[in-house]
Image (cartoon, rainbow, N blue to C red):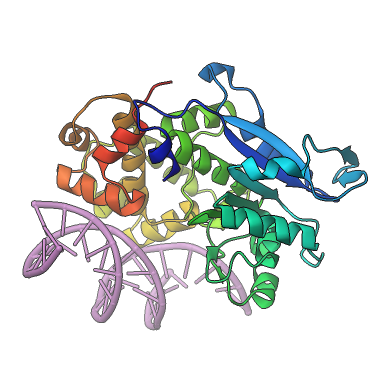
Length: 332
DNA sequence: CTTAAAAACCGCCAAC
DNA sequence: ATGTTGGCGGTTTTTA
């Protein structure tokens, strides 16, 4: 996409990508904070700025933000035309009407091809602007019923952390916004840089968009899941080994059926699916930072043969390993 | 790209 | 009464 056209030569782009957050009266402070944290802070550890972050208010007067703050935007509307990404960090309420200026602004941006993202209830603003008909989106589970009623033409998937449908990226409750932002960094600059940003956030790994939302609930289900997180850590350390459901179940002392069920409850996805995703995310890092052949990588990561790696890679990332390497060859 | 065998997945349900 | 387990077998996905 964008990266391909803008950075044909050698490495990733050097011009910061312009990101604009729309702010409003009643701003949800936490969601805005996520965006500011990821796009707005300097990254001295990377030696250059990845993003040029601005905020724009479409309403006049002094704007309140949740928690008793008053906020003022950095820029006015005139910079929207040069924004490459516009983010709506939440919205003041599911029943709060979206003013025309918001709808007009977003429609115009969408037509220009600007990438548009929402966090949590921000999806109401995109929907009100009519950008989502026929699109697949997600939002916080507590809005699902209401949203479906109000916007029956939008395909809402309630169990995802975030969803990208062409130029529109929507995400679920607050912390899923972090995952979605990291996803965006990864699309723009590759997994290595995204991981470095994530590391500074003290988030260990980037979660895939299709992990179920309920694993966000902070209280881990029950005690026996400890065995699962232990197993997952061990698997990550030895991805090259051969595993089967039967052997994994045995190593946790559960029956196959119970193992499958507990694993899904714990991580939001089936065991082998999780394992291939782990293998794939490691494969991306190898592709970005080493010159190992696809054969060698598949060997190191337990894919069995390179064909399988290629197949899985294509299937989940929509790009072949070698093209991925061309696009994201590392150059921090 | 197609294909067939193998493996994984998951709803169902009787049994704790 | 409520919740978990684990085998069965049909369907989907993976592998080679």
